[in-house]
Image 1 (cartoon, rainbow, N blue to C red):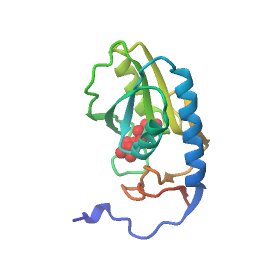
Image 2 (cartoon, rainbow, N blue to C red):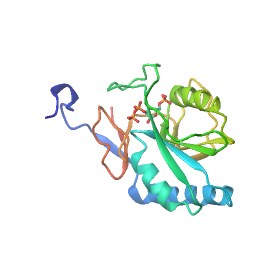
Image 3 (spheres, rainbow, N blue to C red):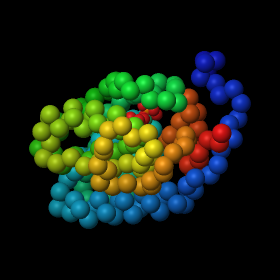
Image 4 (cartoon, protein in one colour):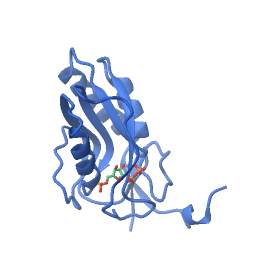
Length: 182
Ligand code: PRP
């Protein structure tokens, strides 16, 4: 049963930002770049749950080099639309990362607080290298500088939903990406 507090009270007006076709084209290009950069290696991809699920699934299947994958769950927003600034790891990486070529995969970088915390934590475990791949780099509210090595799209502002991204846990399953109006 869906709890009342999680319901979106009315259907929010939203505007198409990136179509499924545009997203898939960009994912293919990113996968080609990554495959070329990691030729001869077996990188470890770590998807940061939950928003990353569809991007991660599509990206992994488009990469041509051998790879391994794991997941980490970090949360900073709860069900609010503003970052609380507090990052909590609720599911940690389970495979050893020492000596591995790591690529952290995110759906969106907003304030940068989540990735700043995660990269600091994971660097302490001494990977051989660490790069960041994010589908969306949203710049307006950035508080921590994050070097994104593989970026799908840059947007300045707006509340973005679809293709894994949620508004109060809704809209994750949309195939396209939208910006909420108003
Ligand atoms: C979202 C997103 C990133 C983070 C980015 O996660 O997936 O992990 O916020 O925001 P930041 O740059 O301001 O830290 P969220 O905590 O909403 O969880 P979710 O992935 O389950 O939606």
